[in-house]
Length: 388
Image (cartoon, rainbow, N blue to C red; front, top):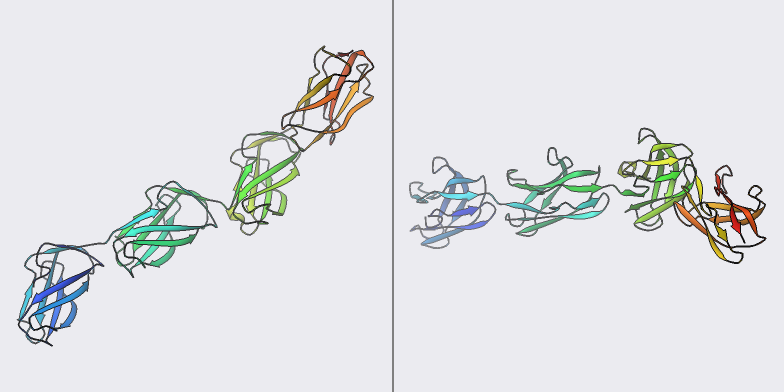
């Protein structure tokens, strides 16, 4: 034996040359065997026919299992006593696998195609199992078997699947020896196919007011979603709309009156019509409160000059989808003049209407602002003001 004949380290799946000298001549058969216990037991690698009268060389694709006590033996088939083995033990080590993506705290959306990548030392034509965990590595689910086409790296295009989780990991394992494995260093997130973007904070909306529900998604233009409302933090759900088409490839919106239920535990749910399990719910509960309007200007004994531009202002919880009627009482009681029959709110919580003050003059003027959709929701100036 000339190789391996020192304490080398040969990696399983690598191709190594087993070499020997001999005096058998050409065309003679020899057995090539491997021992993994220092020579106590042997396993046949191949029967080799010499092509040189004095030397032999066989390209061995090194096999596992790993050991630190490997030896190679070459013996004549015709006379097994004519043999030699490695002078010392050598090492057969397992190949390595390292997951390279996902390997940070990324967020991958279910339904998207993402590349699972890994580096390795297994060579070409080796198979690995690719698995996903949704609980930080406690349990695993099979994704696919993959055969390497590169000697050092692998890439598998995964159509990310649900259910969603913030504790996902990917594992890649050699099918020959599952001890050769690696998983993502940190947990990553699998997002739903739809994500509610509004309402998604602890907003305060007037019950019954027209509001816009928005979401992001990967359903493509026109991707259909179903929208539902919960008044009790997700215990029960009431459908608001079904089969709503998303306006763009990545976002969608739907404008609708909110339910009239008063609650501090409201949630909105948006789910793909094709798979309701991959939807999303508002991150925190929001409030549906009794609708209110409060005139803030004029709201003191101020004096406005005829012909001047003055801002009538009011606070509200109706959003920008609603309109108000603005009226004037010159006697502080009878609102006989309509300044705006339907002024759209200019802000979600406060709004302004610019009025060119008209006569006749009075010291007992008041302003009234009324929700057009519900005349019971209104407010007036707290005190008289002057028009001069």
